[in-house]
Length: 343
Image (cartoon, rainbow, N blue to C red):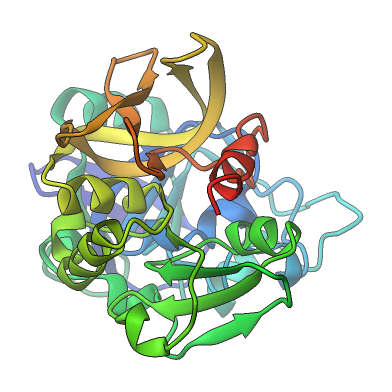
């Protein structure tokens, strides 16, 4: 079925629908990832966004069992690709990408020139847009609302039986963060984004604030909790959105980037060792003002934006990239080990 991608600036792209046939609006962003789309599409950080894939071929290895996903559902609002492959070949494939998108009620378009579309987003920045298939709809900007209620757990979950207890504040956590924590032998308490962890009456040895979607300034209750955590000097690690929340809680500031970082090939330089790591990222906001008492930990080698901060004396640290990867390189998994040494 013929359909249209319409940007708020008036730009229009015609395409063929291969997903669920319904109109949908959101923020149009692009990812430079070449593989790992089942993990990316189920990353809660994409909530409310229409994703443009810069790699031309999409769908070639189908969709694996849900145990390989990063959450229980697809979080993008729509998908734009250059060439969709409907005859996947992979021993773990359970269904085609088209079948999965239709099952999850996610529209998707195949358009001729995703390169031109990506260049437009790089020049003008991420755009509010809509996929129009069978009915006209209004534009929708997901950054104007708090998306955390859509992606966070609704109740407290306890896993593991380690001697150390770690509280994970779920702002839209990827499953591989939980896997990385549990394989290190901790008792893991996953709580909703707006939970006051100190009402749990638990001895908490460390806290992690997860990744998630949207503007970090919307996470007011998480920011409030982070301030209490730092006042109590409990070891704290922020990942992606958690990085921005830590900065805000400590008195820093954040800003919306022009088009963000999304993909598995972002180079980040460790300011201590000067080593460059290739990282997985998915974010549209970044730290602008580094809070007092902290210093830059990682810096992006492409645009020199901040990619992480660490306190000069206390056990507080955060990274803008994903040390758990999935998809992407696992070069920075040691971040978890560094944090665990503080417990």
